[in-house]
Length: 102
View (cartoon, rainbow, N blue to C red):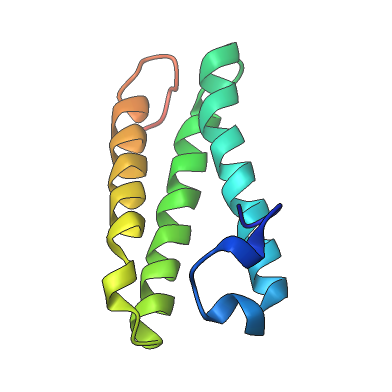
């Protein structure tokens, strides 16, 4: 939605920050690709863990952004995505194929 229909999103900051909307849309898309492709294609699955860490950072920044603008009621989805990314990072770094030192 951020890339193709940003005007349809219900957030007031979108009209004031079109560059930020585009940037976060690209980062969201890259994070989704980074979560899926390495695991599905079984090519460097450790990249899935790094993508999950990136999504965790993005969601933490989004939560701070919304709270600083007085939009704390809008952070539920960010918390949900952050939790999912943390679960993926935790689960994927446990696998022996990742060879991540603990």
